[in-house]
Length: 314
Ligand code: 13P
Ligand code: SF4
Image 1 (tube, rainbow, N blue to C red):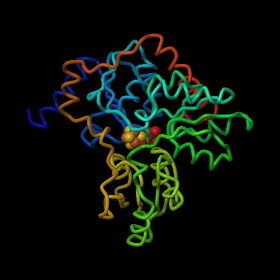
Image 2 (image 1 turned 60 degrees about the vertical axis):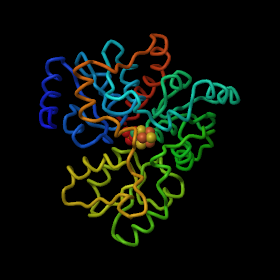
Image 3 (image 1 turned 90 degrees about the horizontal axis):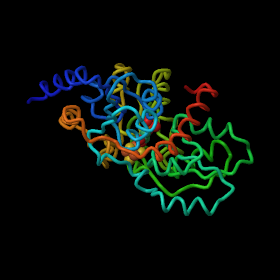
Image 4 (image 1 turned 45 degrees about the vertical axis):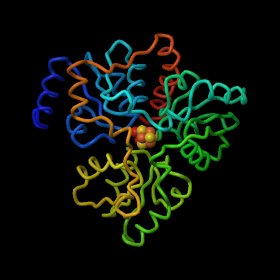
C-alpha cells in the first residue's frame, strides 16, 4: 500500500471499529492530521475520560496511553509502538522511588504526568506542565512536597512559587539537551524574535526565555503576541499546530542554528503511519494493567482533574 492508501485504510478501520485516535502535538504531521483530537497531555487525559468509542488509539508515548487506560479501563487502549517511552518515565522506577519517598515521610508526593503507573500509584497528586504552578500554589504554604520525576520542571515551579520541593533527579532528554548558548546565537541572528520555552528545559536556558509555558500556553502566547518571529525551545512536532494557526508568523527551532538537531523526541517519533494502521487492524499492542494498579494510579489523576476544574484551569 502507498501512503495515500494507508491513510484511507486508517479512516475506514476507525469507522468500522468505532475507534478514536488521540494524538499528541509531538506526533508527526500525518498522524496529527488523522487524529480525532490533538492536544497536550492534560487535554488528552481529559478527553480520554469522556470520549465515546470502543477503542482509543493513543498516538503519543506509553505513559500517556497508560493514563488513558487508567481513566477509561473499560475501553481497549492501543499504542502503535509499545517501545515509545519517555526519558522521564525511564529515570524513575517504582522500587527506587519508594526508597526515596521513605526518606521524607512528612512530604506529599506530586508527580508530573510523565511517569509510569507505578509512580502514579505512589503519588498523592499528578500534575502536567500546564497546571503544575497553580496546583502547587493552591496547597498550604507549609505543605512539604516531593516533586518527581522532572528536576527542571520542579526547579522552575520552586522558582515561581517560592517553595522548596524536594526534587527527583530526572530530565527530559530532549528539552534538557537544549542549550542557552544556542538560543543566544539565534537571538543574534533574529534579534526581533521572542524566545518561548517549555519548563522541561534546563534552568540556564529558561533564564534567556521571554516566555515559559506548557505546549498549550505557548500556542496561546503566539496567537496573542504582536511579534512575527519566535525561537521555539521545545519538541518540533508542535510546529505543525503553530504554523497552522499562525501562517503569517515565523518559527525558528534550535536545529536551525546549525550546531544541533536536538529538538526531536525519538520516542514520540516511533509512531508511524504504518504502525498506526497495523495497530488498528490487529488491535495490538494493547495497554493491559491489573485492576489494583488502575485503582491506585487513578486516585491522584482524578484529584488533579478535580482540582484543575475547581481552579478554572480546565
Ligand atoms: P505537555 O504536557 O505539554 O503535553 O508535554 C508533554 C511532554 O512530553 C513534554 O515533553
Ligand atoms: Fe518524554 Fe521528553 Fe519525549 Fe516528552 S519530549 S515524551 S518528556 S522524552
